[in-house]
Length: 389
Image (cartoon, rainbow, N blue to C red; front, side, top):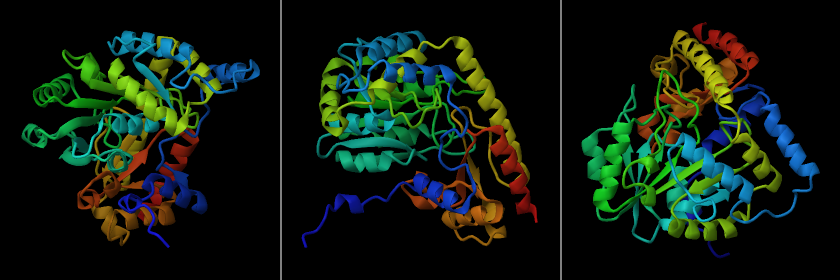
């Protein structure tokens, strides 16, 4: 028989989703996949139900319902300082995941390179391959997850088409500072490169950290694609409603790709998303307060159990070192450790090497998420005590 697609042999299935399946089979506590196990806000659920019972159940406008695009435009102006036309500059997609691959397919030509910070969200590697881009990686170093300016500058060249930035960052929790983003903007302008920013955790910040959108910096409005979603901020990861914001010539191309990838995001959930984007400031303050408390709780649990880590500045993950614990559990690498952790403590995590191009860099790390109800986190704390035996 003729050979199947060779490109699909160059990357693996999602390690995060694989760990969820292993956890489910073992009946463990899932701190691997970043979805809440608590209820979504009642107001957004009510808005979805109202849309469904109101008959909004057929194909949407392909690139997004007008009501949602208008709501996105207003919110990003107020919160992010991004001016965009809801008619020409926004594409509503099936989550930020589709927004990223649609964007890369829309801007990449053969021979182009993209710059990706690592550790990175695991989709970015396959996205680069599927779009035809050659990735160049720039390392973020713990404990503050800073990059070295000379390494970033060296990654840019004549072939650089875009840089991918995730802030707040998954898996490290790094929040890129205004000064860092300005440095990135200067390099984009110098090398005529685009920026693709994944800002899905923009409202989950700690210790006075500020979220800055690269598109709002001078000279970057026309060369930045800003990606976001309702998944994390409103705890509806299964609804699959995201968007990409870009100037109209880029948006025209993103919309073409999006149209033939998925046609459109779920209609009733788009209308519910429009309602969610009008939530008052108190909602976001409550969200930050909850996650700040959960962050401190899990951090304390991990340190007491023997993990090496620092509190993240944003998002809801802790990328922890496993050093001595790896030896204690008799694990050769991060994958073996993750399986052992499920066996011993019933806690699922993500092997750190899945977030790096050079897997050896993550062999002593695992990622935990804490977007879980208190019942789950308390149970994890009790289970982690088994590591001391």
